[in-house]
Image (cartoon, rainbow, N blue to C red; front, side, top):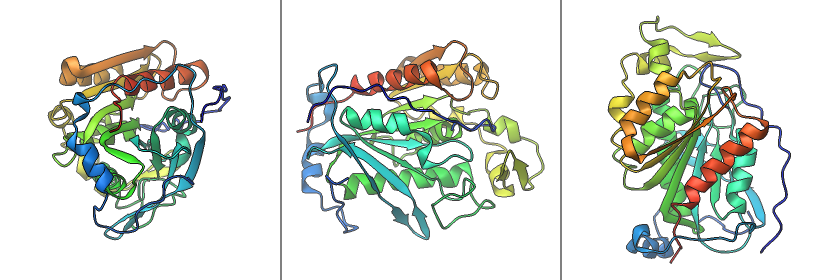
Length: 313
């Protein structure tokens, strides 16, 4: 259904902590087996062999929301879907929050993506925030690597169990620590072929440097904790030696007044990704976007996604 785009006045509140950023339509298949015949048909036709999807500039879908948990092993991830109400198959965007963040950190992004014909899924990384809704891990046992596993299992589950998802068109989006984790996950051998492109707000590639050489003891940080396991996992991690294994397009949005993720970390990421990277710098914006900076960031990412979204067969 069509409707006029209404400007949403959303107060986007992002955490100031280090590396923080901050459906009635498609019912899931309860089986754990990949029985989605329609998705298999999608995968038979590579996106590059289809026509780009083109929507009228002011076209929007009516959006519905629905809670959708993802379980793997002893972990249960709390997440929520935003998707077009109109029955069909749509590309998937999975959104990853920053340090001590929650699934609710990207309301404007989720709404906007769904209005423009994407299934958006936001979630709580397990154990990675105060008062999180995911279960199976604690403040002492979560790390960027366990978060990476959360993200990989979420993508694998959604592409297999949601018939409204076009599993040949999967995009990842993350902010700050969530951007760092997103980049690591996209480069994993289980994800490289599945993920079409990634978009990152001020990705915190500084995390290993921040904790290198620090005692591996639980540390309080602005209302939450960095555990010994977390510090150990990143002590000697070189993210740039990993993220370059992702060979597809990357969008990075960063504010010139970001006091937490310095420009040097962004520049090195851009050098690592090379010609596959698109960079948007927002003058005066800090670590967390609001107001016109938020609107610019959302529309930048949306344009990036739409330029890489193909018609569903």
